[in-house]
Image (cartoon, rainbow, N blue to C red; front, side):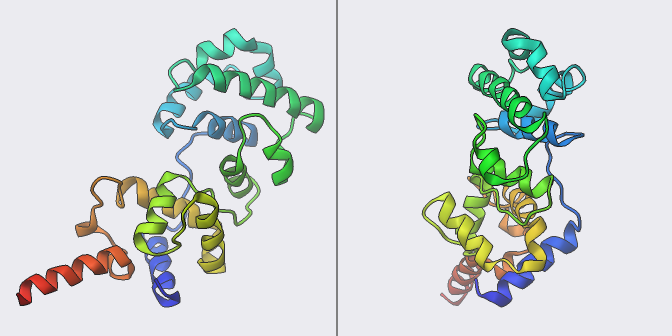
Amino acid sequence: MNSTDIELFFATLKAANPQPETELEYTNPFELLAAVLLSAQATDVGVNKATRKLFPVANTPQKILALGLDGLTEHIRTIGLYRTKARNLLETCRLLVERHGGRVPRTREALEALPGVGRKTANVVLNVVFGEPTMAVDTHIFRVSNRTGLAPGRNVLEVEEQLLARVPENYLPDAHHWLILHGRYVCQARRPLCETCRVRPWCDHGRALDHQGAAREVA
């Protein structure tokens, strides 16, 4: 994809969804941090199902700590890897209280120092809570970036760096939401829905399909 393709690609996604949002449910910065931590190798739907029961009971670091390991585990038992996530979330809460006054820090270094919080989770929090133009590259964004030719890369860090360099500045604040939603619902792993895709005209994969179709017609 060249710069003109990229501009039209994002303009089309923006026209279809002017204000994209995360599908994780939250009402404060800590709830978002906890939800993203719990979402590793789990679906947003599954996380929301658990946090709808957890957050009314405990939605601050102090309240999570008061639940203790057994209490927290019971609330998130339906989420994959729940035992490890419960331990990480409890330790994260302890550090938030001890080092940050119970508040979610707004620097990458401080976020990534929390147990269970990697670069992707930090990027989500920095973007959604603090409005920074970060790219949280998950499996959907990695797939979309490579398949479309938007930001090819061999690993998530390469894709992240390519996206930050190639996505126009005015689209950066919302770009990771558009790409995640596009990968989740249209540019799917097993069978991308190219026949109904709005951005197919500017996508390398879509144009390759069109070229193959034209070649078959000529033949």
